[in-house]
Image (cartoon, rainbow, N blue to C red; front, side, top):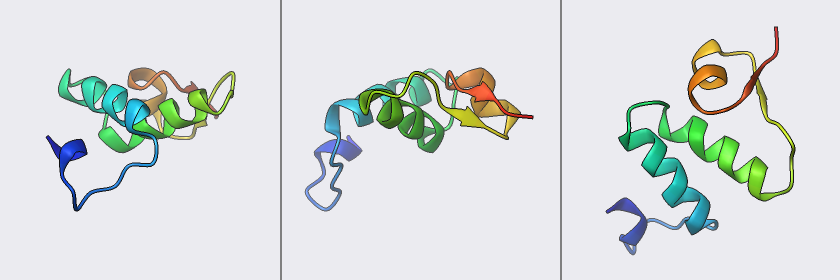
Length: 64
């Protein structure tokens, strides 16, 4: 698993694991999931995106 690799550092391992789980389920890109999970972990009520895919699949709000 990428999060257990010593050459890969994730400062927010728990959020990374949740983002990876969403990615593995095929519902969002890993980066989009990590952005949304990191924002949520920092206390943000919502994360916005100009991109339709992460807005639908990673739990973001579409900003258009």
